[in-house]
Amino acid sequence: MKFQSNLLDNFSNASAKTDINFEGIATDTRKDCTNKLFVPIVGEVYDGHRFIDKAIENGATGTLWDESKSFPKDLEGKIAVYYVKDTTEGLQNLAKAVLNTHKPYVVGVTGSNGKTTVKDMLEAVLSTKYKTYKTQGNLNNHWGLPMTILEMPEDTDLLILEMGMSSQGEISLLSSIARPDVAVITNIGESHLLQLGSKENIAKAKMEIIDGLKENGSLIIDGDEPLLSPVKSRAISCGYEDQNNLQISHVSQLEKGFSFTLVNEEKPFEIHLLGKHNVKNALFSIVAGRKLGIEEDAIRSSLSSLKLTGMRLEQYTSSNGALIINDAYNASPTSMRAAIETLSELEGYKKKIAVLGDMYELGDKEEELHRDIANSVSNELTEVVTVGEKGKWIYEEMKTNEAVSVPAVSFATKEEASSYLMDRLDKETAVLLKASRGLGLETIIKAIGN
Image (cartoon, rainbow, N blue to C red; front, side, top):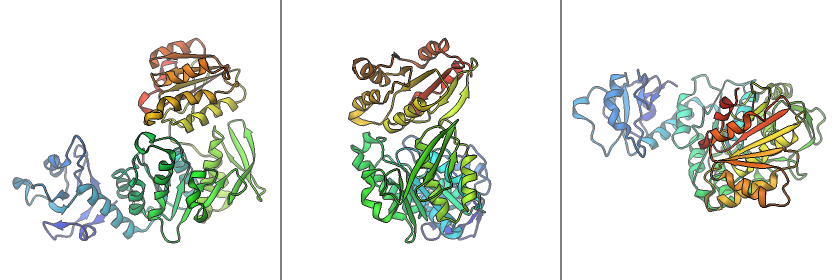
């Protein structure tokens, strides 16, 4: 994103008043910085101010600079310096200024699970009319979101911003930067219980997305979630319950996906994705599309041809013909239960093996929440394989819970689990991989011969 130096005038004190046209921003001096504004991020380990010489060497023509730090005497005059109280705050203020100048529509997405899936669905639907840009990877925090804004192409009509958090106040900050026209809260789960202590507090944190919502903006929520009731009166509620503004009905399973209709509507929608929970995710994008003027046929067509970001119910075929469902990008109890349900409902396979691993950031209830997963293991599964120290709690509960009759085994490492699986796979087998990202469970795919 190109921008002029005058956008910095309202929140910085410049060492020189020369007008500069910046070609974008740079935070990594190992990359090309030509004609860019260098923003030295201060983290727990590294302080970007230490690399100002590299930024100049690589072509940066300006820099934000913490006013409490001395600028190197030998570099004075070699780069325009814009002094700010805090460089991260300066980055955020610059992002606000760029949005105020270019004025794209902004769609903000938050929630405990499904943010990336909904982000991908929104892009598919909204790109049929608008030049869109979305959060890349997991750049959804207090510096990743402004980075996304500042990296969007100049011709962007519509910006889709994922908003993540780990504590109260973070979503409020992100929403105040983005000022969304449309805001989506996908659901409330157990992610970040470690930091926030309860699902009620998680819900309060997610509802902060309304803090920056434009005056005539639209809020779209999971209407089946009681914890979102404080904002339901001002929201478009979506779900299966009859008090929702838009109610899902007549869900039919396809070979690899679902068909569904909405109450008081006749023409169905189709998604070619595993997981019934994706029906509700699709509805969020349908509502957003309608609010932003997308034709109904375009909405249907885009959803039926959708492809998701990797490791979200991603399908592979192993060398011996087994179906491998990789949903190992991340995990919470809510998303793990949904993944197990997806495997259970899968048709055409005699063997269904769920490989379940550690879930992180669950706080002092982590053992209880892992053990509770055993109650979601249906008899449609033929076996459960657990991996890791925390995953072992699922195995232990399955062994002691008389209501669970599905066989289970437990391994400390992915390598042990891979060796065990090798001899159990064939064309009649479907395997689900589900765990938190830190476990790296997806490496099993390579080990079993994808």
